[in-house]
Length: 411
Image 1 (cartoon, rainbow, N blue to C red):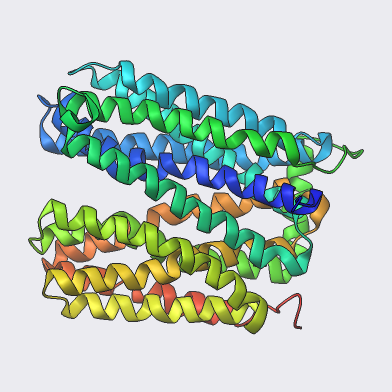
Image 2 (cartoon, rainbow, N blue to C red):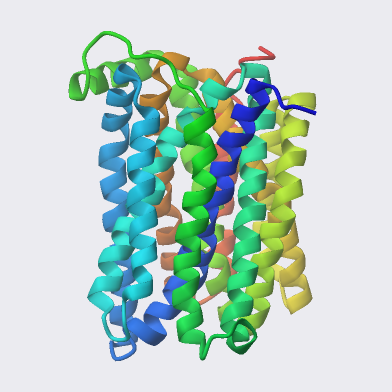
């Protein structure tokens, strides 16, 4: 059966998530931190390694935070969201592939390429997210956004599983050692990302250019516009808080497991569980959002996250850690996808690029407060369980603020 142009555009848009999620799993969450410490910067003091990686993330995040709203305004006026997305994709793909060429001890090159790769990945997300309004009507947004996240979890998880197998058993893949297997994995991520980005550029259309100011003038107009749209700024505030908790759990879960004494193999298994459970769960949340209402489905996910933070305080065994990973996998993609579709319905479609620039800027801000709270709590109490429990405040306050945002489809 031939696919309609509308469905072809939606699947093409979602396949981009399938492709670029490999960078998030194999590079960001999986191999880069370990390979940097053990190979590229093996002779550098551990605390200095941590400092360098932290600065890398901060530089990339600040760059994207400053650029995304401004470039989004330009893209809206000129009708060039796909052009900007292509540019950031090219930066991410080329620099990720170039990691293959970085030899042992060449940590400055690894850091420089990592900064550029992160800018390519995160910088492109604003334009990718904003194209949701071009491929889905408001009533379709929950399902289509969930399809993107679902395919992202599956695609990123599949390639990550292959890459893990390559690193653990390099001889099975005709490779002499784990170091070369890891470097080949970076090259595979770049090819995977580029290949599955192509359907979007071929089959997704965007709104034509519109008249008016561009750049900083348009950006200030958008800021004033956001101030006048109470549901938009109230949602952004709620999103900033609860996604801070979500992102902190993503970032700190492996460290939390290590502090409890679990083996690295157990932690990799838990990470893979989140990826593969996240695929059907994200799709299910798209259906749930359509049936119950998007905001109600987000509340369900927030309730699970609140329960996870309490559960983590009492967690003792590896099996309990796996169950916690499964619970997170059930809601992680759902809260991400429904937050995106809910915001897309709150904003003017013609200004999606700049509004999603602010949306993703809030997501980058969320990488600051949560980890700091966890780190300070752990330092003051010496208890990693209390550190994770402290995240409960983000989910509770975020949910209370979300209560004050009207559902655009249900009133």
